[in-house]
Length: 414
Image (cartoon, rainbow, N blue to C red; front, side):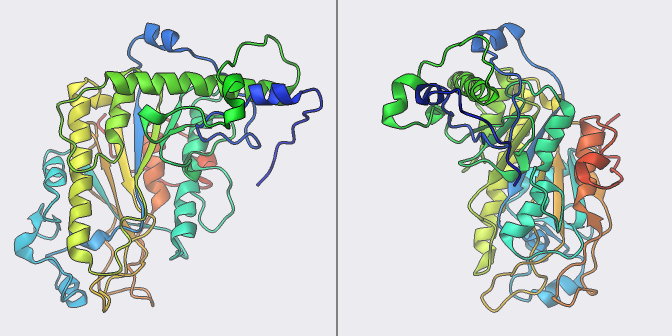
């Protein structure tokens, strides 16, 4: 990782403490000074923020696409999975070939209402079967490379080069590589009620009273002061938005942090890019997969469907789409533990009121597998990223962001 080397020769220890970092996932060694300091009152005065918003939902662990959208019309599926194959009578059919897992009533309705796009065979050349490595490739949109910035972070830099405050939000316990940016400081939080400054006891009084010190020549000190002030403002905004958010919409067992996204959108947060996840490698289903996997899919389907309903309630349904992915699929044949092992190509989903629902890409063959019994990818996953960047957010030149030319799908309403 490249480091920007700052000089602290003119800064006293008290200055550095006063400029201490707040708990929003900021790395002082990798970001130039952006524009900061938008206060809560100023945001409130602006009223509701408009503009297209992208929400990225990561299904961590490697979701089994074959048991999510079941190819019940293909006999090869049942030959590969004599025990794990979902019986035709339990499938929520959407055509004469495919159907959703039984608990995915929400996705079935979204699809039949034309609000859900399914992209087949998503992956990349020379796939990695390591969670960490493959996820890094998806996070950076740079397979088999050492790219240090995330694709969402690079997208933020391109959309808003002046790096306004609160443009990029990552709801997580720790910042994702996907949102790592040259210019932007992502707002990173988990529990809105506990989104406060991380500090040692000895630093409490100093860090709690960050003030405007006027013109500061030292770039390192200016950076830290601005970052601390921005973090404090973001904390106030998030807590205020969450405190005012009350929704009658039922998100199910787990909302996958999507209610927090809805709260910030409803409050008029100027965020255009949100990143969240189904955490803790939940979809790593090596053993006794079926019951656990069905529950996970039910929770995810319920949460996404509820989120879209909540957006309709607050009048923002036309402004938001949700893109869902997992770092890889599962191997086609079931294993001896009634589970599935790490695979390759997988499904991606895009949901929203402005989505042209349907199926995109070429369906991978279940009879022509790679030497490891994996699906062979038919769609480079960056085509879907390009679709979000160009088709939804309106940035026409995606090559610098994705390190290549990837033709977007025609996935959105005109």
